[in-house]
Structure formats: C-alpha cells, structure tokens
Length: 315
Ligand SMILES: [Zn+2]
Image 1 (cartoon, rainbow, N blue to C red):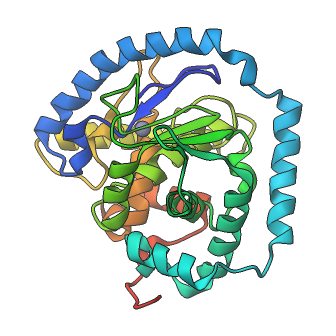
Image 2 (image 1 turned 90 degrees about the vertical axis):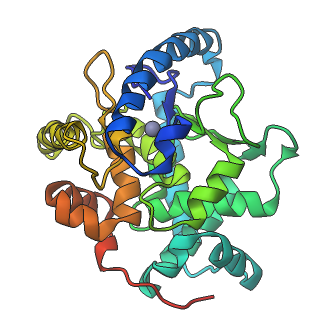
C-alpha cells in the first residue's frame, strides 16, 4: 500500500476486500482513503519489524551477481519446455493462458522452468508448497516478464503462500517488499482464473517487485533515475494518477482500479503501476482506449501487446 526508501519496508497491496472486486466506483474511492489510514499504522509496525530483521538483506554486489546468474540460467534453458501435465494444469487454472499468443509460449515456459529451479515458494501452513501451487505462482510471475530478463527478479528471496489471510496483514491478500512476496492462495486462484476482470493478485505483486528492483522504491516508475525514460515515466504517473482520481471522483468507472490512486504521505503513487499492469494484461483493449499513454508505456516496458491478443483454444 505504501512505498518507502528502504528495502525492508513492506508494500501492502491488492487489498482490502472491497476494492479487490475490480468493480470501481465512488464507493471504492472511500475504501482507498480508508486504506491509507489503516495501512499507515500497519506500515509503521512493519518498519519496526524490518529494522530488527534486516540481516537477510543481500549486498548490492550480491544482487547484481544474482541477476547475471539468473539470465545465464535462462540462456541455458533455451528450448526447454514444460511437461504435458504441467501445461494442462496451467491451461486449466490460468485464464490468461488462452489469450497468450503462440509465439510467446516458448519464452514463457523457459522462464517458468528457471523460476521453479531458483526461487523458494513455501506454504505457511503446510510448510512445503505443492508442485501445483509452485507452478501457478511461477507461471503468473513469468508471464509478466515473458519478454524481459529474469534478472527483473534478482532481489527476490522467497514467495510465501497463505491459505486466506496473511498473518500480521489480515486486511491484505498480497504484499510485496523488494525481497519477498506474500500471497493468499485462495485469492490467488480466484484472480488467476478470471482473465478479463482487470485484477490479478500475482501480476499485481510481482509488478511491485519490478518497481522496487531498480532503486528500492515502489513509486510506479520501474526504471532507475539514470534512465533516459525516467522523466517520461514521472510525468506519465502524475498525469494518469490525476485522470484516475478525476474519473472516480465524478462517479465514473475506469479501466484501472480506484486503488491505483493510492498516494503515500511522501507523495509516491505505488499502486498505479501495479493496478495498471493488471489492467494492461487483463483489459488491454479498454486500457488502450481509455489511457493510451499508459498503455503504450507498459507495452514498451513489458514488450507485449495484450490488446491484440485473441482467445484461442489451446492445451
Ligand atoms: Zn499493491
């Protein structure tokens, strides 16, 4: 929900049950305001937790090496494919599977295989996550970077799955820091099956991870301050945030959920990129029509064009 200039800070997201329905509207804006107030108290607690538990934070050098290693592993997996059962499970459980163009399938599956090898996924109640749980998380996380390097996830250390509520963050269905993602398993399954409601828990949280990766801040600018695109992103975020707020204030619906309008006390707008990412993948045509600038920026960043995707019958 908030972004801070520290790796250990927690970004509560995707939240609050009312605003997760993806419907939008003026009532949802009220929830956004409520999120801000409630979330601030939670974040303060997490800041304290982060301070006391910072020993797991890798050094900058280590994380850079990790990125190089991940990209090398991806290169080595070139041409590797999922097994038939794995593909069938993904087809059955991930709504977007049937929309992803055939020419992206190989790159997607190569990334899934490296992800499964390289990132621990635990279930907080059962201990070990099942193969099916791991597969769903890996598949969704890798769809986001199907045209990007795996080093986007170089800071990620662990993914925790919870049955429903996330302990210590009972109001959230997903959270992300620079190093850790927490997901409610039941909510994940629900948002994964529906490919066209503009809301997807896993895509949302992993978009935060990408936003954090460049500079440790989630402010909806996924490129570093040294990038030639940084200023363009800054202007875009400010403009789109203002358009979103105006739309919801006037009672209109919008392709990006109202929660995308959340703004931290420092003025960062961490949810626009995450909510925009979910809309980009699941409501591409509508986003392109309503917010062409943000659609083009996300298309350039992710290297895919979901507005052109058509549903196909695949196994
Ligand atoms: Zn979020």
